Image 1: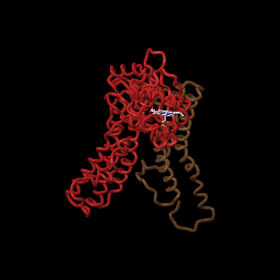
Image 2: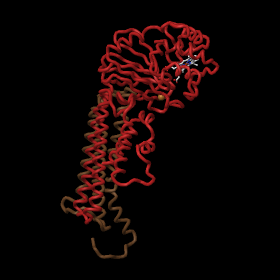
Image 3: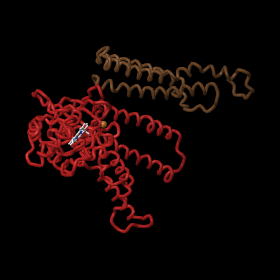
Image 4: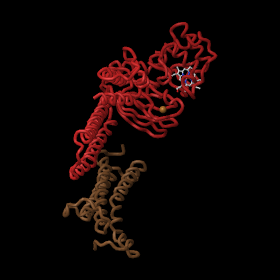
Length: 136
Length: 370
Ligand SMILES: [Cu+2]
C-alpha cells in the first residue's frame, strides 16, 4: 500500500471496498444470532404453553442449550472481530484515515461493539428461561 | 435537594393515581401556601421555603386508599421496595450526571484526556447500564412467580363486566360459591388466590395498596394471589381501558382480621333479609313493581336474574355502582334515578319517573339488606 496521492484508477475504489465484503457480512452475524435466538425462544415457549406441542420443561432446557450455543457463537465472532480491530497488539483505537487497512480495522471495531450488544441482549433474553419455570 | 423533592413529589403524584383524583392539582397547591401572594417571583430563602412546602404538599398526595406507595400487604411491599430502589437509583444518577456537567463546565473546564474519556464512555455507557438493567431484570423476574404462589385455602373468582365486578368466594370445604359483587373482602395475614376472567373485553384487576395488577381476558383464566397485612379499606380500580365507563369501574377492598372475615363470609352466604320497617316493605313492593328482579338477584326471593350485580347484601357495602358512589340512602336513590348520568352507557336503565318518596323507600329497602 502506498501513501502517495494519485488519481484513482477506474474501478479501483470499487475493488478496494469489495475486499471488505466478508467482514461487512460478518458484522451482521451477531445481531442476527440475537434476533434468531429471541424468535426461537418466543416461538418455542408459546408452542409449548399455548399449543401444548411438547412439555414446557423440555422446551426450557432445550432453549437454555440453544442460548449457550448462541452465546458461544457470539463470543467467537466477537473474538474474531477484536483480532480484526487489532487493538490489543497495536493499542491504537481509532482509524481516522480512509485507507484499506483503516477500513478493515474499523469494521472489526464496529463488529466488536455489535457483538457486545448482541451478547448482552441474548443474556437478557435467556434470564427468564433461567428464573421462570412453567408457563406462567 | 429541592429539585429532588419536587421530582419525588411529581413522581408520587404519577404513581398514586388514586390520590391524584383526590388531591388538588399541583398548580393550586402553590397558591395555597399561607402568607401574602407575591406579585413578583420570590427570591432567596423564602422561595426555597415555599418550594419545600409545595413539595411536601405534593408528597402528601402519595397517601390515600389507592396508593402503591403506602403498601398494606406483602406483595405491595415487594413492589414498593423495587420502586423506591429504582427511584433512589434515579436520584443518584441524576445528581451524578448534573454533578459531572457542573464539574466539567464550571470547575474543571480543561480538556479531558482521551483515555479517561473513553473509559468514562465504556464504564458509564456500557458496563454500568448493562449490569444495572440486568440486576433489575433479575430482581423483577424473581418477583414474578411470587404473584401466583398458592394461597391458604380461600379462592375468589372475579369476573370483569362492563363496568362492574362479579365476585364469587370459594372457601375451602364448602360446596357452592358465595356470590357477591363490586366489593372484595380479604382476611388479613392470609394468602388468598384470585381466579380472574372477563365477559366481553379485557379488564385489569388492581388493588395498588395490596399488590400488582393482572389482566382479565374473555375466555381465559388468569391467576394471582394477595396477602394483605393491615386491616382497612382500600380501593381497587380497573387498569385496562374497557369502554365508556372504564374510569368508573372500581371497587372497595376491605381487609379484615381473620375471625371477623369468617363471620362476615358466613353472613354473606345467607339469603336476603326480609324488610324490617314499613318504608323498606314499601321499597320491596317498588322493587317488584319496577322489575328490578329482571336483572338483579336477591337470594331467597323471586329475583334471580344475573344481568346485573347480586344485591343480596348490598346494605353491607361501602360503595355502590362499582365504587361510583358511597352507600348512603341518598346515594342509592341518586343511582336509581340518574344511573346513566353517573355512569355513561351503563347497562342499567335509569328510573326517573320514581317519586322522591318512592326512591327513599326503595333505598331503605336496599340499605336494609345487610
Ligand atoms: Cu374494566
